[in-house]
Length: 265
Image (cartoon, rainbow, N blue to C red; front, side, top):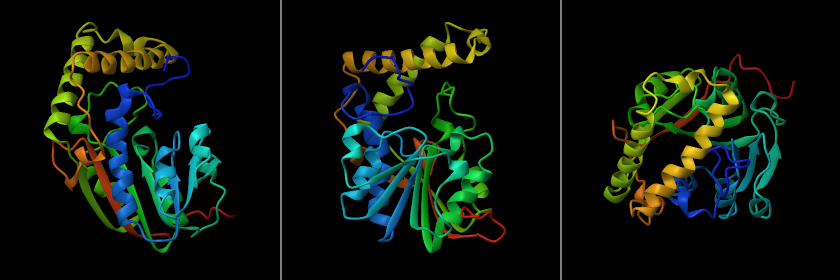
C-alpha cells in the first residue's frame, strides 16, 4: 500500500501493517453478529466493506452504506452496498431490524442528524450498536476526529435518542496492549518535534497528507522492530468500559422516534 489515495482512516484487508487495526475493528463486528436480532441490518459508515461482508456471511441481509464505494472484493460478497450521505439516506422509516455504525460518530461536528437517522430507520424492536475511540486512550492526533468521547458522555448523548443504552468497552490482550503502547510512544516522539504545534496552522490538505504518511511509518516501524503481535479479533474482548478500553461500544434499544424527521418524506 502506498500513500496515494490513502488517508490513514479507511482500513483495507491485505496489508500486514494494519492487521492489528483490522482485528480491533473486527471485534465489534463479531460481537454484533452474536448480539443483533435476525433480519435486516444497516451498516452505516461501512468503509471498505469488510465488516458488512462478515455480517452477511451468516445469512443476514446486510446493506452497507458509505460515501465511497466498497472494495471490489467486498462487492462480490453477500452484502449489498449503497453510496449515500448520512444526511440523505435512501430508506423509509423502520426499514431495518438492526444498525451497526463503527468509528463514525467521532467524525461529526453535529451528531444529531446521524443519531436521528439511526433511530428513525430502526423498527420498533430494533437494536443499534455503535463504537467510537475512547478519548482516555486516544493519541489525539487524528485530524478527522472532531470529538472523541468518554463513556458516560457518550451514554448521555445516546439516551436522547434511545430508551435503553449500555456502554461497554473494547479491551486488549497483554501483547496487544504492549504493542499499542509502543505505537503511542513513537507518536509522542514525533509530536515532540513540533512543540509549538505549527502543524495545526498548515493547510488542511497538508495536515491530512502528513497524517497518512505517519500512520504508515509508525505501523511499519513498530512491525519492523517486532512490536506487532499476531493478533485476532479475540485479542479485543468486549467488557465493562474502563479508562483503558481502546474503544467504547454502545448497545442501544428502544429508539425514541417521536419528532424525528422521516427519511421517506
